[in-house]
Image 1: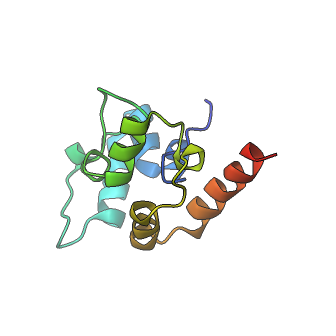
Image 2 (image 1 turned 90 degrees about the vertical axis):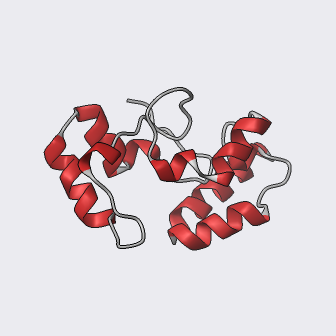
Length: 117
């Protein structure tokens, strides 16, 4: 399977929710629920169905459905945010702070460098 990089730089195809969905594995979904669920964001097994951030009209986690960065990327029709003229915007910086993923930021910065060469 080809790697799917989300608008924010996360790797959808490496995400436990994506993997559990593709395998249709409820035991894996339960592991995701246990790891990601919180009092503020309670999750159930049926919430763990995602075909990846770049898909349209398919299954997505609620977080992805509500994501401002994803909505912006779809609207601008970019492959991911590294391809956007406004990289790295305030929305993206805010999301990186929430997801605490230096790897996502670094991944997009590296993609961006290859676009400018």
